[in-house]
Structures are given as C-alpha cells and as structure tokens.
Length: 297
Image 1: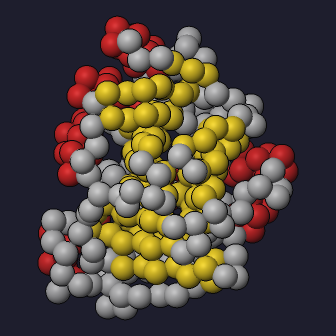
Image 2 (image 1 turned 120 degrees about the vertical axis):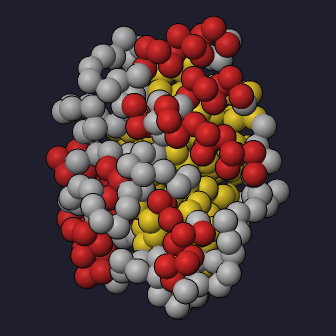
C-alpha cells in the first residue's frame, strides 16, 4: 500500500481533488480523501472498513470498540480479509452478520472463525436453506464445531453495537439476492445503509415498508454496483457518498446514475475504504493499492 496524496477514485478515474465538503442532514460535513493509509479505528465513534474484494462483500464495522463483520467474501478472499483485519489490530469479532448465504458473502467465514474469536453469528436465512452457490450449511457446521452461537435475524429486528443502532430490513419473497438483508446503522446524526444484493423489486418493497427509515449519508451500492436502483428507494436513502464493491469496468450504468446526481463514490477494488464518524461528521478515505496509485501518477 502507498499513502501518497491523490484524489477521489470516482467518475471512472483518479482525480486530483482531495477534499469535498457536502451537507449531511444539513449540519454535518463529509470529507473524502483518496490517500490516507489504513489505520485502526478510534476508541470512540463509528468506523466502517470495506475490504478490497472483486465482486464480493466483506465490511468491518467498529462502534465504540465493539466489532461486527458484515459478510465475509469468498473462500479465496480469506487471506486478504485476514491480513487487513490483522493490520487493524482485530483479534475478536463480536458479531458476524451475514446478509445472505451466497458464496461471495459467506465463503470465508469458516476460515475466519478458525483464526479470530467470534462472539455470535447472525444470519438472515434458515439453517437448511439450499441452492446454487449457497454455503450456509457448511458454514454453520463449522461454527457449531467451534462453539460459535448462531442466531437468526429477520425483517424489523434491531440490535446495538456500541453506541450504534442497527436495523435489519428484509424482503420476504424472490430469489436469494432479492431476499438478502439490508443493514441500516445509525450513530448520532450519521447513518450507513449496507444494501447487500437486493434487486430493484426488493428495493421497491423495502422502500414501501420503510419509507422514512432508509435515509443514510453512506450507501453500499446493491449487488456490488452491477444492478439497477429503484428511484423511490434511491430518493429515500438520499446518499451523499456511495461504495461500489466491484471494479469500474462492470459498473458503468451505476456510475452514470451517480454522476447524474453528483454523488461521489469509490471502488473497493482499489484499496480499503474507511468511513469514520463521531456522530456529527463523516471522514472517508481510501488506502490505494500500489498499482492504482501508479496509474494516477
């Protein structure tokens, strides 16, 4: 990794602008940088670390020292996830939240549970769920052997992580992606929406169920940035910054939409994205991997 100053990795390139200030609920500021090195979370506040995976999700949330892993990438992503967690000084995962049991969202969990102490594993799907690329049974079998408690969550469930309030939103019908669970995390006046892989059909149903609860300054784009956005859902969220967990080549349509609305975004594939908030302000940075930094110079 390299931390030389470069700009925001949005609009398909690496611009030289290093700082943007945007309103956040009219009173906060959003600072975006594309040069800061990865560093451990502050002892107080909310931090989100988005792992640099291609077409897979793994995000670490730290709230006032408590840790939660939201999705766990593919089986082959384990070394990358492990190394970044170690760099952040993480030894214990208090909660592991799985949005849905596809291999690109839970594949590395068995290996992670071998390496890190896991307090609880939360899943939005029943233990016997089956289908193509579904890794739930294998994961739960290994967690049971390791003595990790497994809990089922469903639409409308709430829980806390430090001072953060977490709300589960889940559409009940459709395929595995359509039924994946969204996680809305609020801390003070700041909110994040991690939108899993929900399609436009599921987005519309969730918007109708939660028209006033979706608002978030930070949006993890649904389905890695490769799918569409429902207009009602998008307006209800009204994001000020968006994270795409795929590369720039396969997300052109999403980029065009975000450009049209003048919403900055970063690609997780270019390096770990860090979002930190004290409950009033947001600070967003990215630790660019060397080859992306070289492209920008």
